[in-house]
Length: 217
Figure: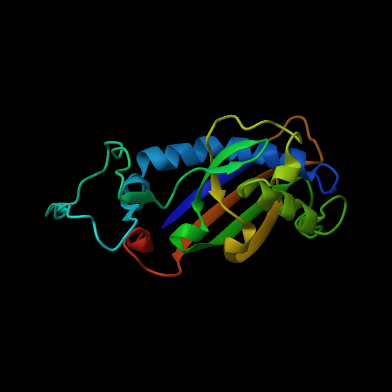
C-alpha cells in the first residue's frame, strides 16, 4: 500500500525543542491520516478485518461465511463481541491522550519512506547553515510516531482523541531515502521552514487475515 504525507512548517535542527515540533508535525499529519482512514478502501477494510477471535473455538457460535463480493466497508464495524479482540485499537499514552497508528506491532507491518526535503538552502548545503539533516529528520520521525509519556506537557496538545498518527515506533522504518531541494514561493523566509513530502510504502512482514490486503497498492 502506498500514499503520500506532506508537512509544511518549521523544523529546527536543535534538540532542545524536538518534542515541541514533533507534536506540531503529529497534529498536522492527523488531518491527512484521518482522511486516509475515511476515504481509502483498504483503510476502511482495515477497520473491519482487524477483528480476531480470542480463542480458537467460538463457543458454539456459528461464524457466517464471507460474502462472495467484496464490500466497500463504508459502514463502521459493529461493536466487539465477547469472543473478539481488536488488533488495531487506539494506544493510550499516560498524560497525553490516545493515538491510532497504522504501522504497528500487532499488524506485523513495516514501512519504507521516500523523502523530498525542501528548505531555504542550496541543495549542496545539506549539512551546513542550520541544515542539520540528522537532527531535523529525527524530529520529523518523532512526529510520525506515538509520543512517550515523558513528552507530556511538551509542545502542542493532541488536536483529537484518539489522534491518528502514522506508526507506533520508528523501529518500523525498514529503509528510507532523502532527496533535498530549495524551498520556493515563500514571501517571508524563515530559516527553519521546510516542506517535507513523504512517499510511504507499507510493508507486510507476516501475512495473516488482518493485513493481507495491505500487500496491494
